[in-house]
Length: 400
Image (cartoon, rainbow, N blue to C red; front, top):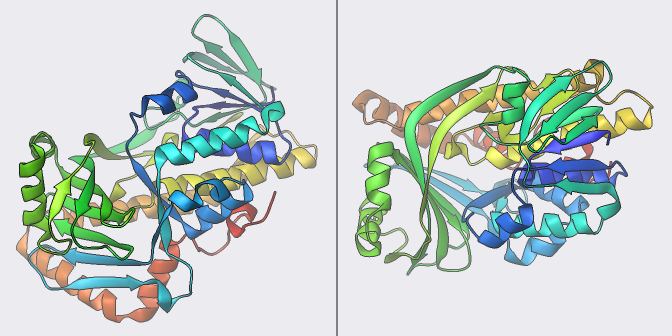
């Protein structure tokens, strides 16, 4: 197999489908069976899908299957605890399209697997096997799996998450910033309708976001210091709802935690290089950012759109898809976006996750000023929608 993708999460499945639609076969390797992982219903997370990411999933015939269960975000309202300053992003100022949609991870994964079944001649699976060794030769990469099976490929793409085994075996260095925070994830029922407005409130321990689901329900992502997060997450539903109400006020009316509830550690991890000889990183293997900007998976989708285009174009020209000159095109295209988003999320996390009075005043002034500087506000809105300078074909809604 010319292309092996390690990791059958959202990023790995999306890339395999993009390549299959363009007629390039790939092998997906994962330590668990993706169908069994889906059936376990352990992943209760939701994902924000930007406008450009939606275009990609439309080209892949995925969006058409999940559109009815995707919840649009028309506006975003940002506020600071203890301040009347707000920042209001209104989709109508830049067009008629929603700023994004909220999708359940399990819904998206199920649709991706269904579409891959429709392209089964271009996709193979090896599951319940971990990668234990990697050897890069002149013209191929040898992956050794548990049990001794060896896979030879021209190109290996690591999509195996923030603790990427492939990245470690390839000796690609990475930088990690631990904020000693965790994200509490829950589904909240509220008496007031959300009107498809996403709400983010900055608190001393970290941001708290409510993302619109079906009417009177929102997905909650509440970032807090580790010790505090564990205590809050372990409260019974009544006291949890009271703690949430204390921080949100009356913006959503009567609140009720309907779960299930989970806690995930937060940190920034960025690889120092996204490529090596015959190897590339995508998604969380390449970069794992704080959810403060709500762009984590959309950055991964941009990885996928770029590397799929680079690989497909190289294959059509008869070039070696695993060569450094080909992979450097991917690296050059993605580096600035990843580093700038990493720096921005790090700055926002440090700026908004403390109660230092001078910084608090700066934050309040900044929110108010941003709200009144329309050109700057529109630029940040377009970036949140994934409408940045030069987009690869898939993010423009075009086939490869």
